[in-house]
Image (cartoon, rainbow, N blue to C red; front, top):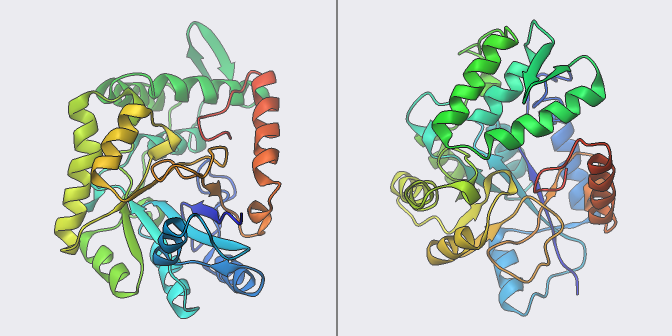
Length: 314
């Protein structure tokens, strides 16, 4: 059975930022355009309608099928949409609803900014001091701090981020930095006019598996309604932020969405509300059938080193 490779990206940056903890792997418009052209030559790009028809037909898709998706709703994904339209292709853009009508920077982007723009290099966690200039210490601290953030209520997580910014003396985010900008309502309408599909990615990118019932309803249900009101059409797709979900999240998603995607290649492709995806790059390497096994190996090495992996396996 030919299972499509569902690939996800986050950003398309006009200017490479190799020193940034979040943007360093982001393709430029030029490299993404080259990737799309190579994709067309060697693989079978799908639309969501193609993908869904294959699912209904007993999970039968053409060999070497690929579905392109994009998470978070960064405004620089307009580059990707315009390239896809130029090449006659489509993609699914999973959007955070909270930044659509207010200035909101999700915790993970603030966290990455602090790590990148720190002016001090030592911080403490659980009574232990980490020197972030030492790679292994930095990786261990990164995993443990992130897991701590994702295990506490959102207001407490925000306080942790604020304290970290002060401890590491990080410079503030430039409000004019285009790579920190998210879609606005008119951008979503433009995306749809270009033939792109819009899906939900929660409201604020919290850990859905740790959310209260009220928080989960806001993140999963209210975010869908907000997107639908903007687009004047139902939103039927969701991707789980940071690959974090449990049975409770899946049950709620199944009541409101036609399909849901994970952020891990390790799930069996037999459940429409946790379909596996692969983190994309422009080398086509993630499209290899060996990619999931490779990610498992990397995850095992990280665990052995005490660096851990997140639920997506990287």
